[in-house]
Image (cartoon, rainbow, N blue to C red; front, side, top):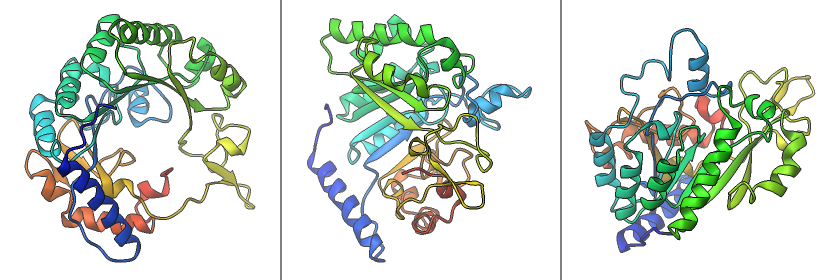
Length: 327
């Protein structure tokens, strides 16, 4: 892991955990900065994934990407403002939110800047735009971990969710990453991520057997967030152990109960392509924005009244996005 543990980062992390622990006792103190930040390299995508706001927008006649977004790509100005404000305190930068990060041509340079600042870097991608040149650029930039989404081992099962994508392109991208990693003797972790869906549940065992031969270092299965699930959903796994939803006595499906409290909104934020600072990755419609980093320093946004009100509400799962969250 390439993160540099400076004194200020260590102190900030300790304060973060301490302040969160006190909040669970009803004592609200806020003396820390984010320990991680998710930045959104792009708010557009090539695919039409049915449970993604960007994918749903792509499927409509209106056009591409998330509706109402004036800037589809993270600019240098927003990126550098973000990096300048977090590099003293944060440990991790995640290069993903909703759109496809690789559509931003400046991504390798952004990763390189974060790496030089001593931050741990993570990227999540559908890999459709991951060429041999891009794979080498990312590995050379010092990327610590890349998550490649692949939800099927045949074109049929893959396209059941990644509509408009190509399984063969994903496999080729994994090979490019493996070749670049070995050629450059890099430590980049290649993680293959598979959503647990009814359409691919017969392939889960094969995923476990094949992920290394595909070029990945590790395999992660992830449960799927589904919309309009109350009466069931065709993508919901047949085994309820692998679903976020449970059928109730009323015959309807409900989200499984989770523990209260959310460390994520105490430890990090999302910065969108336009510089909006959001509480977490579930705020897909920017409903709970703390403000814009180009107008107000992150230190102020992270502890302003909007942020504190949201965190207190999140403790009781009152915001709508918290009711759909899976922690």
